Every structure is written in C-alpha cells, then in structure tokens.
Amino acid sequence: MNTESSDYESGFTIVELLVVIVIIGILATISIVSYAGISQRAIAASLISNLSDTAKQLNLYQITNGTYPNSLSQLNNGSGAQPSPNTNLSYSVTNSTNPQVFCITATNSGQRYNVTQDAIPAIGPCPLMNLDAGSSSSYHGNTSLNDISGNGNSGTIANGATYNSGTISIDGNGNYVSVHSSSTLNGFSNTMSASVWVYPTIIDGAYRRFISRGSYPSQNWYIEFDGSQPGKIVSNGGASNATLSVNNWYNIVTVYDGSTESLYINGTLDKTFSYAGGLPQSTDDIGIGADADGSSSFAGLISQASIYDKALTSSEVQQNYNLIHARYSNFSYAPILTNLSTNPSFEDDSVGNHIYPTNWNQYGSTGNVYGGVANDFSVYGSKSFKVSETASMDGGIWTQITGLTLGGNITLSAYIKSSSTVSNASLVLTTSQHGLSGNKTASNNQGANANGRYSVTLYGLDQTAVNIFIGQGSFGTMSYGNVWFDGIMLTAGSSIPNYADGSSSGWAWNGASNNSTSFGPAL
Image (cartoon, rainbow, N blue to C red; front, side, top):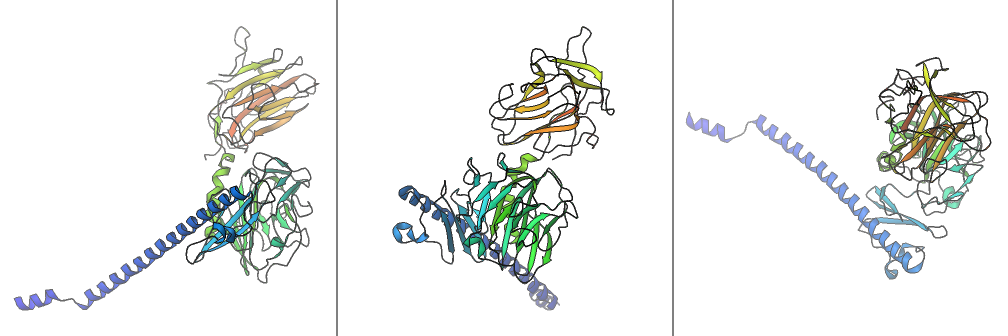
C-alpha cells in the first residue's frame, strides 16, 4: 500500500502533464511578446540615438562651413554618417532660407523617426512640406512661412491673411496661404498623408477648405467642411462621422495607403473609406485655408500644415498629436474671474459715492460710472453697469489680472447696449499699463445702438499680467452717451463660454442679485 502510494506521488497523471504543457506554452508566449516589446523599444532608442548623433554632426558642419551639407556623405571629413546596422537615414536640406533647415528620417524594421535642426525627435518620416506658424524657424515676421521639412516648399501668406500669435488668421473671404508646385510635391500618387491644425470660427452651409491640392472642381486631394452637413469634414473618400464645432482646435489628418483613405481627428481614427486606384497626378499649387486659387475660404485660425509622400501609421498619427497638442491647451477655457466681489451691484451708496468692485479703479477724469440703472436686456437681473460719457476722456473701470501663462490667450466678453449717440463702447485687454497701447493690446469697440454679446481675445501673452478695461474709450473724435455692460466674463483661452445656466444669455456677474460663482464646463 505504501509502495503503491509512493509510486503514485512520484509520477504525473496525463491531466497534470497537459496542465504543465499549457503553462509552459503560456510562459513561452509571454516571453516572446515581452522580447518583441523590448526589441521594439531598443530599435526606437537606437533610431533616436542615431538621429541625435547625426544632427550634432550636421550642426557642427554648419558652424564650420556656414551651411549644412548637401549630402550626409560629407559628414565626418567625407566618411559620411555612420548609423547603426540595419538603419537607413534619409536627408533633406534647404540652405537658402533664414534660418537654414534640415530634416533626417531614420528607419529600421518598420519603425520611423525624424529630427530637424530644432533637435526634437518625432515619430514618423520627414514630411515633404511642413509649415508651422508657431515655430520661429518657419515664421519670423514677414509674409511667408518657411518650409521646415528641408524641401523648400515654403508658403506665401496671401490676400490679407494675417499672422496672429503662432497662427494664421483667415476671415473666410479669400485670404489663405499659397504653396507653389514643386518636384518634391509632384512625385507621388500611391501613398500620401496630410495633416492640418485648424480652429474654425464659422461653420455654416459653405464648403470651406482646410487644405487642397488644386481648385474645385478639378482638385487632386483636399480636406474641407461639408457645406451640406455643417460641421462634418469631407475629403476625397467621403464625410466624417464626427461633427466639429466652432472655437475649438482640431488636428485633422488624412492618410491614403493606395487602396484606403483613413480620416483622423485629434489623433483618433474617425472613419475609413475605400479609395482604390491611386490619386490623380497633379502639378497644381496647394492652398492652405482655401483652394489653390483662394476660393472656398476657411474662416478661423490655422497653425500647422504638413504633407507626406508616405502613409502614416495610426501610431504615428496618435503620437504626433500627443507630442504637440499641449501647445493648444491654452485655447480651452476655465474661469479666471467669476464675481468681482461678494455683491458686485455697482449701486451708489447712501451718500452718492460710486461702489467699485474689489481691486478695480475708475479710469478717466470725466467719465461717470453709475450703478442702479435699469437693465434693458430684459432677462437675468434688473441692473447693469453703466458708463455715462460727457467729455473726451476715457470713462470706465480697469483692473489688473495676474498669474497668467506666458504664450497663452485670454478672452473678455460682455453683453453691451449703447445709446444712439455713442461712438465707442469698449472692451480692452492690454499688457501695457492702463493706457490703451503697449506691448500687446486687443480691443473690441462697438458704436451706437450696440445690443448683444461681444468679446475680445488677446493672443500669445508676453507677460503674466493683463490689464482689462470696460467702458468708453477715447479713440479720436467721438460722440458721447450711455453704455450698459452686463454679464462681464474673463476666461482663459479664446473660446466664449456659456454662463452658469448653460445658455449664452445668463450672467457671469451683474448689478442684481443673480451673481454666478461658476460657469462653463470643466476642463
């Protein structure tokens, strides 16, 4: 009995053996996956190291010779760049721009990384065209955007489009950025990708182009708003699932791999379309913010536009979005100022003195600031802040807001009603002293019979403090009268949020007891 028991305990049943085999198989699979993950990370690290070393060699060459080399073979005293085994380097350079620019792509086992003269590695290949209004290498104070891909496909800011703190402002009336046709842009049809960062301010029943090769009706490829479905995006393959809204930043990417077009919004795949047969060959110019001829103009801000002759992978699209989207986070809003004081009623006290909100000051020696006046807006409160102007000095109130983010944006909005004799009802943001000019100043000046909600945005803050002014501004010859302000709101970013009740007709704070302490959605 004991012997039999001992024999039984020293062996394995068939079931136990099968369990062991399964466990060994699982462990082997885990090891293979783990090894594959480690191997991929090692390749990525090697590619980034190769790019860093080569970029240093290029910059050393430029310091010595005044230009970057025309070929990587000129590096290391003619022995060339020396990448790791199985790594391929491709290189493009433009020495005719100021600053001079280059881009290198390193490829190994299907992984691709690139780096420019700015020395920040990014996933994916170098683009054929890369225009970035937020980069000093691409824009530095003139009417052109340098192509920082190294391929020389620079853009011209045309027909009244303007630079606006790291973006190009396009009003929807024919202004855009024009890029001329070139040999590098003409040589592909089987695969391509295009990426653009846009901030629409108008979405209506019009077809408004973000980017286009050629012009309607013979365009080669394009991304635009769908005029028949406002807010939808249309590309060669069809319309998006998602619907865009105004006053938000979006990264729109289209990828064509030879048979399928994929549309991405903010790094996420939105829709795929079957699109076989290749893109038509084209030598047309490229329009950014419109067709190539300036028609079908977009309305809003455009910051970046890139074109590739390769199909980006979903991982490359996602990681490129992740790399840069924080740059646009200042455009989302959160309340900076809710109530000016515990009870900002603006009413005169018992002896006729004007009550000002905490830390606010009267501006101008003859402008009269009143409280306790009737609110002509008819809803949400019975009193408004009123300025009665009787002479040529500015009349109103001003204060300073501190602790802001350099490079960010700030928006002042209010409901304004003015009498028939007023020439200026002003909302002003400035980083100067409390005057109306300085380092950065933005203003919205409404005239007679204003009646609605208005706003002004100061982009790209150059200081961490901003002075805000509400009242009647002295901007030359003017007429005088009464101006009422209500629902005054100061927010981070360039969006104009709703008030506490979720509508655009409530009040952030006003002259009655309806004083909101919070508003707008959370970040």
